[in-house]
Length: 204
Image (cartoon, rainbow, N blue to C red; front, side):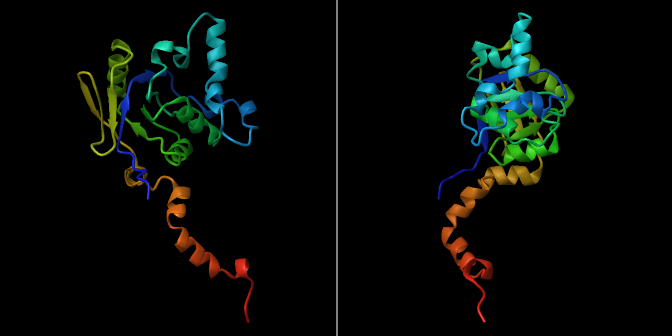
């Protein structure tokens, strides 16, 4: 049985400023037509990125110095709007392994945990200090989100983080991947399936 537990995410960090960033901005609707998630990361924040580029500015996800980022720092109510699972998929496939923010939309949080992408909350004051630390640091500086200790740390900083106990337990235990859990118990699944009349025909 593979160990899918997620306790600690470490790596460079990336700051995305702004509150109420909805799923349509994260993943525009026109990119939802594909039947797989393959390549979807190329379009994450596409409209925002294009709009800023047209005005001579650079979106955080287009900063080459931050391309190795593994921790994304966001604002309040991140992931609000429609319940498209493509949004956390695109973020994760771009390379992000944990998200830190003031708050998250509930459905986005659920979709993120379901693919093993931890989303942890910090206070507004700590968020401001974390942003400052990241933006003042070398782009390669390591920051750490520790789900076991419930902390986010970096050069000269340490803050408490919060996430629902159910989400934390699923990530720490590796049970966030429901499909893999079922496959790990294939014999049990087959035994239950064999007893289901609508799969095997009704018996007199």
